Amino acid sequence: MDPAAGHELLRELNQWRPTGGVLSIYVVINPADRREGWRTKLRHALKGLDEDAGARVLARFPEGAPPPPGRVQAGYIEIGEGKPRDKREIWSVHQTAFARTVAFERPRPYLAPLVQLLDEGWPLGVVVVALERVRVFEWALGEIEELAGWELEITSLDWRERKASRVDPARGTATSASGRDQYEERLEHNRLAFLREAGRLIASRYGDRPWRDLIVIGEGDRPKLLGAGVGSPARRVHEIPHDLIRARPAEIGARVEQELDRINRGRELELIKAIEEAIGAEPGVALGPDEVLVALEQARVHHAIYDATREWEQRDGVELSELMIERALGSRAGVTPVEGDAAAALQTRDGAAALLRY
Image (cartoon, rainbow, N blue to C red; front, side, top):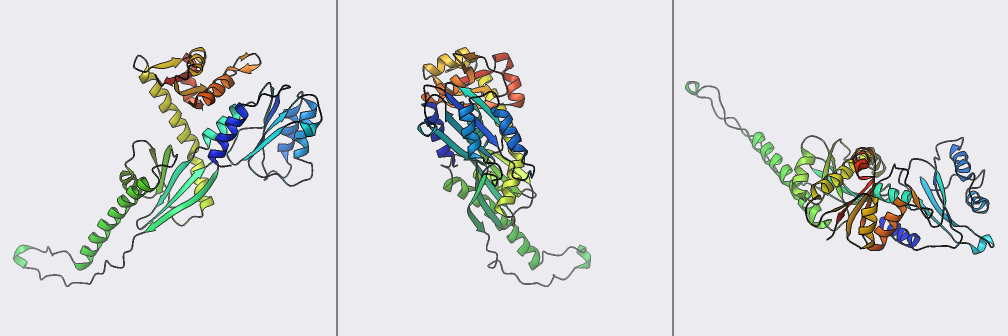
C-alpha cells in the first residue's frame, strides 16, 4: 500500500458508522515461522469477540494455505444482523513492522493501530553515497524504490608523470609536487564538488516529496558533504556510516529499517520540544486530552500528539485516542502517536497535547 492510499483508507474508515459496530483486527504474519504461531495468536485475539465476524476473519486465512502476503493484514468487518455477504469488509495489506496481533470490537473502526502503521512507515529519502557514485531511493511503508543515480566521470582528468625538479643542496631536500599529486588534488576537488552538487540536485528534484527525513549512507565524511549540498532545514538528515553503494535495494531497505526506531523516536521528541517551547506563545498549545479535543472540534489544531502506549478511558464506548484521531482527520490536522521518552514526557499532560493554528 502506498502512503496516499493509506491515508485515503483512513479517511474512508473514519466516516464509516455501521449500525451494529465493527470488528477491527491487525494480523501480524511471520512466514518464516514454520509452526505458524501467528495463526494461534490470531485465534487467541478473536476469543470473546463476535463469532460471526471472527469466522469471516478466519475464513480469510484458511488452515494449510500458504502464508498471506505482507507483514500485517488489517481488517474491518461489519457486525450485526443479516447475511455475511450483505455485511461490509475492508482489508488492507502492509509491509510495515507491527508489534503483535490485536483485535477490537467497537462501534466504529478502531484506527489507532493503522495510524501508527502509517506514521512509522512515513516516506523517507535514502541516499547511498561513495566517492564517485550516488544512488537515490524512497523508502515508504516497508518498501524501497530506486529513483535515480549519478556517477562522476573521471576519464577527463588525465594526467602524466612529471620528473621531479633537481634538488639544490643549499636549499634542502624539498621538491615541487609531482604530476600525480596535482592529479590527485584535482580528482579530490572534483569528488567533493560532485557530492555537493548531487546534494543540490536531490534537493531541487525531490524537494516536493513528502519526506520528513533524509537518510544518507556512506563512509567517512561523504554523507556530511552530500548533506551540506542538500541544505534543507525542513528535513532532518541522518548519517549512517556504511558502504552499501553496490548493495541490492532490499539490503539497503533492511539497513534503513534498523534505524527507523531511532529516527521516529527522535522525531517524536522534537514534537515534544516544539510543544514545550510554544507554551505561553502565540498561537499556543492545547494540553491534556480535553483541551485537545475541544481545539480539534474548533479546527484550531495544527498537530496533535498522544501517548500510543496508554490505556485510554472510553466515552460512549470510544477511546479518547480514537476521538482525537477522528477529529484530527475531520479537520485535516496532523496527528502522531508517540512512544518511549516522548510518551513519558506526556505523562504530565495526561497523555496528549497539540500545537495550535490560531
